[in-house]
Image (cartoon, rainbow, N blue to C red; front, side, top):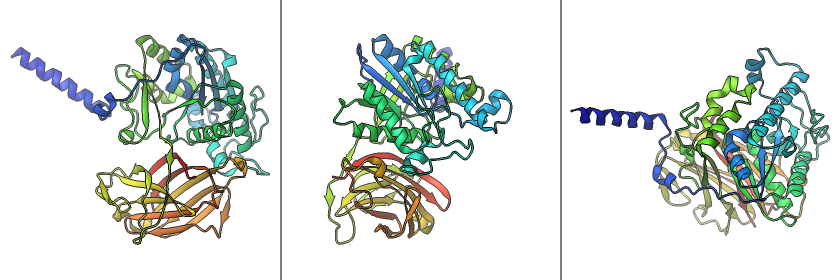
Length: 468
């Protein structure tokens, strides 16, 4: 009888434990490979959108790389000076003046310096560029070759304000960020780069990945190709449970379990995990308001993974206007039994976003739930890269649709005669964008957000797609 009660109790604990985690596909997770070992004198570059991203995503690999005798350099895109709510909690006062935002950035910079010294790095290993927190995606998508640089509406600053940073005084424009990042990579010539993920919902995390892709393309013939390891930080409802759970593993979010992302895990020893937890404590300006979130990344492993590059084969439109699409990304997780017209199959619980090169067009197809009707719309970003044109001069296209209507923008300017074609059906939307409008690119960086009216439904992270 006692054994029976003990068995029931253990079963109860197991069920509670399963309910408290994200309950991922354990069969899939068992096949996720370990991150390859670091080597002596290997050059590791960690790119952080904000101070604290480097520690919550990479504190374990920093320790492992140092133990192996590798070199480490960390480059911070911003100083995180836009998180005013965290500073209201931290300093217990309202932040409104321009100088107070700069003060925030200095505080966060010093927190990173102390945390990285604790992990074994020196201040000389750290580079703070100081570009605008929460403004770098706006810069990437709209501010190139501008007479007026990006100006932050909250801080009212339009150039790097940190006198001790190497980018001090640099205007907030794409060329300056790209040049600074390119210089860091060219001078250091890393073997491995850890960077924020293209599917991260934070705009600075997306933009740092995009700037890196352009910088590496520009340097393709000048340095050996480094290995890239994106890390995910911001994903709605992830990771769970919140707060410090060193006994748990860090799984991919459920929405990415069956995606094309090639995940790898870095397992941490007990000592490495404890030191990671201790290093997070140095970020007092953030932990006083968000400790429950930051500590949830201190688990048995760290997680890295990227989408594969898609290569499109030119296709011919069939008689019934169905195109053979290659390279798809799932979305609409709550939309059951969607018929994918282009592929003549059904996907349980997911819609589909697909891509193709058709004649003179780059085509994007979205299979959507019929119930979304004419209130369905998308925001599509398409940034082309060409070896024959400097990236600053390449078009930065975004398309906004609502039902069967659409608007096209190149950076900040609306394009009237764009040549874009839109086909809107009951359960699909197809956009065909002239390759000429995209600058006749070698590849595109593209992402999509879907809406029902003004309500966001889902999004597809940035993909790199070769079109030639």
